[in-house]
Length: 436
Image 1 (spheres, helix red, strand yellow):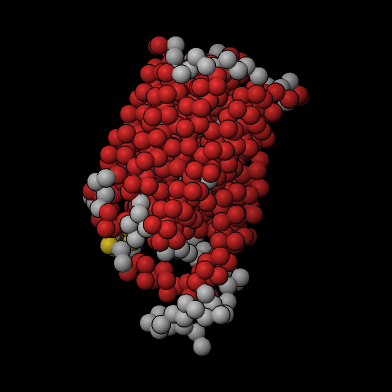
Image 2 (cartoon, helix red, strand yellow):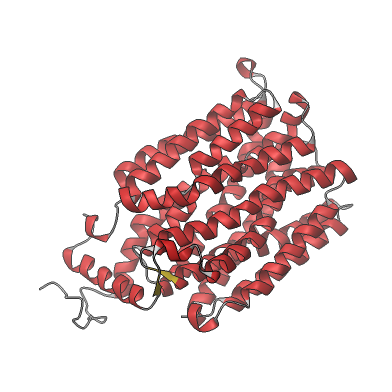
């Protein structure tokens, strides 16, 4: 007999235990979403490697690069909220597939960049194409997991960022070093082309692999569907529900956006400039730079998994978020002050990267615990939208500072300050709401 929404849930049942059912959901969904996010992040930040040769080939300044890297987020900002609302209406399967195929095509076509204007256009259109992917994934996970299980799952998904750096750095360096000149194409052109194709392939697979929600999952039994649905309904009943209109005036939503903005400033300061910082410390070969970028991301994976699991176990979010943010800021300051040494600079960069990246999954446990109802899609998108504006300002400011001072040091101090601001803002979030 199927379980009703009001009937007791037999947690100790041999046939149906909570951990077993959620393990089944995780095995089905998380590896594919993880892969999707890896190729997404790689397409977003591989411009940092392309920069190593593209700037000299096309005679771009650091400021031109900074604006081009950041303008991606302007397109992302404009179309993110509409994209998430469309996802809720048409279903995650079709919309996530559309997003991935479109951004893969645009990313591959970035090989045709010739002038600052075309650079800006391709980056802006790439932002439009990818808009809604990450908040869409966040929203999609709320269809399957209750709040108390989301921290660990978000840790798995967000580890795609350091994993993409762990493998993407050496891969990008290898492409840059090996493919330059083949068929008359520059190394950075091959980089855009070869790293854009996987997104198209994964996007097509998403159309057939993903399900829009629990009721559509043919790989679940009817009892399992009912079992999961009861928990999602119970979790939703404990949230404050919001209409789409109300989230635009909700101060908690914009507090979340401000926190995300602060942390994203640090994230993209590292992501877009890590190869440049390593090169400035005395490393010249693209493949060597790519291999060295893997080290900070490897440490970040370990730290992220450990901290998110501990946060779920303790059911505590705020201090588990504050401490990595402070560590990230300290690492950025140390990166600037120790730039004369490759070894010390790499140690500082590793600390900064691990701290900054660990904030990401922990942060997203806050707004998903606060928001429910029809406004959840718009609210999550608004938070991510405001946060990703930092992706627009961060590379522009660092690029401008580097052009003026011929150093990234002042830029690192600025980004460190933003990490400390984010940590302070986290403590304004009510503990009783998010620590469950």
